[in-house]
Amino acid sequence: MAIERADGIPWQDVESLGRPDTEASEHLIWFFPEEGKVFKATAYGKFGHSIERGSGKNTPLEYLRRIAAVNEAFQDSATIIGKFRHPDAALGLVHAQDFVPRKKGSRKITDTQILRFLNEQGFELDPMRAGVFVNQRIGIEVADAHPGNFIRSENGAIVPIDVLAFKFDQNKGIDFFGTRTEG
Image (cartoon, rainbow, N blue to C red; front, side):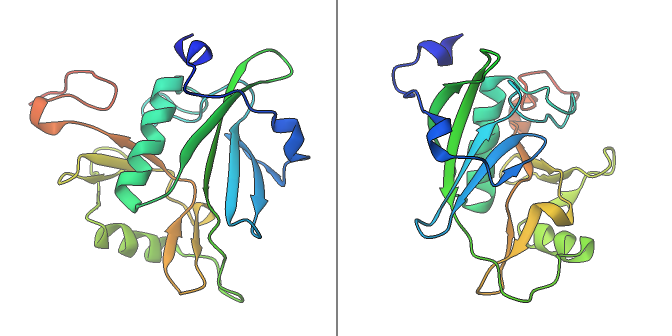
């Protein structure tokens, strides 16, 4: 695997981070608010979810593209900081992003607030795919936009913390996966 041989991605000792604060469907997550960072390691020898193929179906390259698309769409700070070996010998990736403190006492973000936020960011609900939002201007689609994947920051802003985002090139008739689209 190319990532395994890539010298530019250093090996990380995720065990040195201690027990994860959260074990989610895609990541093992550690919060370091005092350092202003969150670390996420891909879980279970998989590279996250795919909008088109479902849970745990991303390739490593798609995972990297997904992080880049979230950064572009929402000015996120996620950066790959390393690779590691799972106990079952599967390869994993670790990324870091800025820790966003939650607004104290804020209620859970609602679906209506998420829709308004995504619309303000130029995303429209895709009429052909349930739960997928598309921003034609920047060529990014977003899914998994549910209340558990958003927080309200201390300054009151809605912040996506774990959405699926994929870049596509509508002008070339190519979707994120490099497949020709109709049109």
